[in-house]
Image (tube, rainbow, N blue to C red; front, side, top):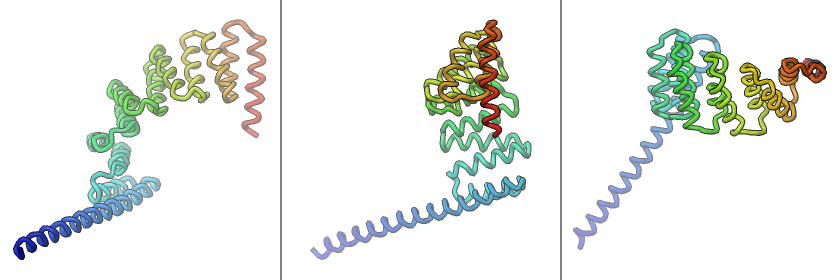
Length: 240
């Protein structure tokens, strides 16, 4: 009986020791995370002061303290880009995605590929960002800019801007960017329709000016003149 009691007590003590060990591990992990955050903040401050090498050092210290600190990798990757250490930069962007595959981490790596002019890899990352977060306005905006401004692929730009609108139909910029694409491909009626919706949601100079130009292309000069007046009014209001 005494022997059984001792065994029970022994197991109980072992359980207590195990729980204490887990608490210690959590405290160590927490302290490491706090230390990592301290170095991360120092690195961010160094970056603001354009002390890029020092920033790299502090981001490296942050990673050493807490290897799961995603923002330490992404910020160090940015510093490596500025320092033109392309291989190191890519490794850090990839590690950030490995730790936390979000629209933000994919977009960051996409911008890296943009810098080194690898168009397809850049697009692939923006597409991945839009898949990971189908409601990411930033991901669809990056895709739109790539298709519209750099690749001149207006069909895909229309598709992306439509998805942008579907995310938030009350956001005027979605209609404005799709209108720009309509205008670029010569669809002035489509541009006017989107610009009308855009000014309904948020009247601004850019929208009125582009709609005026669209009316001019359709020889609707009175309407164009009216929109140019509205553009001037909002331009004056904004500047004042």
